[in-house]
Each structure stands twice: as structure tokens, then as C-alpha cells.
Length: 626
Image (cartoon, rainbow, N blue to C red; front, top):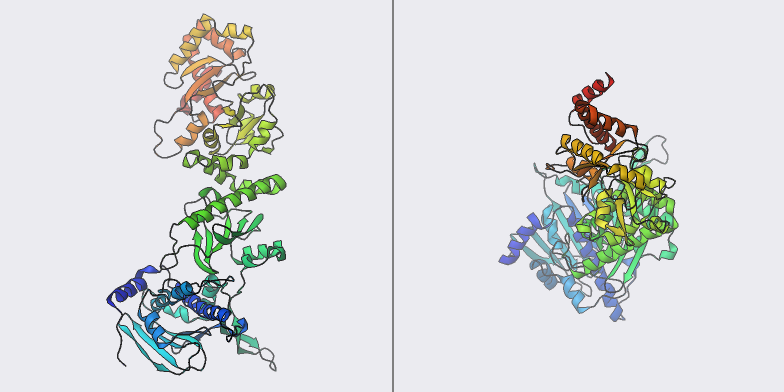
């Protein structure tokens, strides 16, 4: 029989598809199994309107067979089959989808939806095979036909013998090359893994004869090869089962089976949405972060299925970055997929699903915070940093979603508190939400600036993450209460008596501070009497938006030249050190300069800032001692 040629457009499409449309060669099996599932669904739909046709699901299956010696993989289905004309039309014209045409004529109902829409999935087999032989017998026909093709050169259709309704596809697997190992597709374990990965939830059984070594019945210590037919797929997805029939153990097992993590999920939510967009989803809140979570290599995203067939392993568009720790899957029939089914078109349905999922995750976290505080704090220890990054990123667009989920260590019993809990117990006279920054709680508690705020009876939030203060700067205020650092130039209350203030404002004191500022020219913006120090002699505060802690963090980043907070050196005028300063200023300017440099270095060390010249500091200390 004469070979028929693909049309010029189809030939170009086939060559392009084999070489570039699909990113992974293993996809071929997913496509062929989806087509086989469609073929059986078509009989189901016909049975709905044809009383003469009885559909017993038990009679329908897909069989995968391997022949290593002939280098063939065969996929057989008991579906509707194809006539000679359908073979010519569906397989002879690339990108003409028989499934799509059938779907248009027979609207899907009862949850059975046709998977194939583009008419190119079949040809993905040419990525691993150099020859395809398709034998098919259509429902209601006694004749069978064979379609044979070596690829872009064309195809032949001829009469054949086939005892049963359905389609058989024989793939002649390519020989290995230097770049590709095609032998792997002749191995049982490899095909089993691909089925489990992509087609585990196809509604019909996918069978294969599996060989295993088993002990001989009459011979101790001897084994024989036994071949048994096994079903490779589970068929019924967990997300399509009745929630009332499922237990936490079912969800935990699913979490482990899908290898979302090696921990136990802290919480899950099972979504069955049937509104503007129809989808099912199961979302998990992990207990521990993956080892690479806070690296550039980490890929966020949910598994995406279309009618139970895996389309993408990690669909990042379904999760905002700040919820990137969530694991799980989404299955929808409404998504617009591209020709290879590997990428999504950015359509309205996808955006709706993503928005709904974001809200569900937020509700799940709020529920955990409210009802299971210990579990939430465990989660927050792992992923709280991500939430704070979410507040800071995108110019604070997400702060409304995230600010109520944040926790900070409080000076009150060193417990984690929310912003709402802090504000709720604020005294009536307290104007601001006070916070202190530092490398650790222990370091913050030694801060000279902390003492006066705590003595006032005000609670202080301890910020120990480098992102913390940046996040609060973005939030700006909570329940109309602004955030205020304990190192801020203005604390919002005056702790000095009028007598102290009068002493601080004498002409002699003003001249002394001006002298210190002159000696520290360029290092501090000003020197002044402190309104916050009680038992400590000196500290640094800052003016403006950039705090001292933020300066430390930014200076550790690339291209941070010139980043500097407006520092203010504050002196405790009630401390013996101030009286020593006064005496030196009056009697010994050299000693006054030495004291000034020592106090500035001391203030830098208290703040955790580096000393510009440690040798000079050491020499100055020795001069004082001598």
C-alpha cells in the first residue's frame, strides 16, 4: 500500500514537537495512557444515550507490555477504537484531536471528562520510538486496521486482524545514543515509576505483567521467576473521596506517598470548590522546612492535575511567594493548557484558583494560631521568616494578609505575642508599640536603652531576625499605634525631672557636648544629654528612618557603600562618667578627647557595631589605666 505523506504544516509541527515541545521524554507514556482513558470514556458517554450499549467499568482497562528482545513497548486499551477513516483523520492530521471533537459533540457529565484536547500527545511517542504501529478496531465494526509510521516521512494504513474492540499501540524503542539512554523505557521499574508519577489517578486500571523472584514451593533456598499481572495505578484520587470517610492518617499517608516531606504535616485542608471555577485541592502545612528552603535553589509550587493526570510537578503560579512553604496538589477540569499540557495559559481560571488557595492558606494559619497555639509556634519557628519577607516585599502590598500572623518575643515573660495581643494589653497612656533590635534576646536585655521603657511599665517587642525591623517599617502602624524603636530619638515620654533638664541645658553643658561633637565630626550627628539612660553612662540612638540595626544589616550586603544611620551619642548626665567629662573639659583637653573617643567606642560596642581602629581603642584604654 502506498505511503501517505503528512501535510507540510503537520510535518513541520511533528518535527518541532518531537524536538522541542515536550521538556521530558518520559511524558510520552502519560500522553498515550490519557488517550487510552479517553477512548474508554467515549464508550461510557455513548452508553448514556444508547440503551443497547451496556457499560460495565470492570470490562475496561489498559495493558502495558514490554518485549526487550524486540525492543518494543505495547499499550493496549479496551476503548472505543478507530475506524480506517478515524485513523487517517486523527493520526494522519497532526493537531486534530478526536477527543476534542467528541467532547464538543457530547458534553461531559457525571464527572467523566475527556483528557486529550490538542491531538499531539500521541506523537510524543516518537521522542523515544523510531516506529509506531497502531492497530485498532472500532466499536460496532468487524474490521480492524493498522496505521504504521516511521515519523515525519509519512504513514501507511492497511487492513489487519484484531479480535476485540479497542486500540493497540506498539512502540519500537530507539537504540541508545551518546546523549540518550532509551533502554530505560524497556525496564519494568521505569515504566511503573512513570505511571505512578503522572497517571496514578486515571480512573481505569493500568495493568502490567510484573516478574519477581519467589521461593520455590518444593526446594528450600531456591528461587524462581514468577510473572504476575499487577495494577499499577490507584485509580481513585484521595481528593475525590468523601471527606467524611477520610482520617488524618489517610492524609498523612498521602503526604508521605507524594514525598512532600519526611515530616508529619502540622495541618491540612481539603478543598472541593464548585463555583466560578471547579477544582479539588489538598494543602499541607509542613512541620519542618526542607534543607534548601531559604536558598535560591528551592522551587515552590503545588502539583497540578487535569482530570487526575499530572500536568506540572510544581506550579508556582498557584502560590504567592510568602506561602511558598505549603505543599499539596490541585486538580481542575477548567484550566486552559498549552499544546504540550506542560505549561498553563495565564487565564482567569488559574488566577481565581490561586486567589482562593491564598485565602484558604491564610484561614488555615489563622485557625492554627487561634486553636493550636503550640503547633503554630512550632510552624512559626520554621517559616515565620518567610511571612516577614512577605510583608516587606512588593512594597507592603501583602501586609494586610500577613500582619496578624506575625509573632515576636515580648519582654513580658519572654513569650511570643501577636501584634493584636500586644496592643490589647497596652496601658492607656502608651502612645507607641515599642521594639528593640539585636542579635538575641539576651543581647537586647542588656541594652542601656531598654531600662527606661520597662521601668515605665511598657511592653517591648524583641526583634532578633534581620528582616524584623524592615517588616515593621513597612507595616508602619497597627490599630492606629505607630511602631517606635527604643533607640529612637523620641520615645514619646519624658523621664527627666525639671532639675535634670535644667542641668542639661546649661551653657557649660552645651559647650561640652559641642566639643565632643567636634571631636567626633562625621561619626555622629549630635551629642546630647540622654532622656533614657538611668544606670548606664552612654548609648547611641538614631534619627530618621534608617536605624542603627538596619545600617548593620545593609552594610553586610553588596553595594552598600555610604549606608549610614544618623547617630546621636547620648550621655547620662547623672552618671559619675559625666562629672569626669566635665572636669576633663575644664582642666585637661587631651584627657577630654581621650574620654570622648572611649565613650564613643563603648557606645559602638554596645550596639554591636564594629570599631574602626581596635588598636587605637586598646591604646586609649592603656592610657587611662596608666
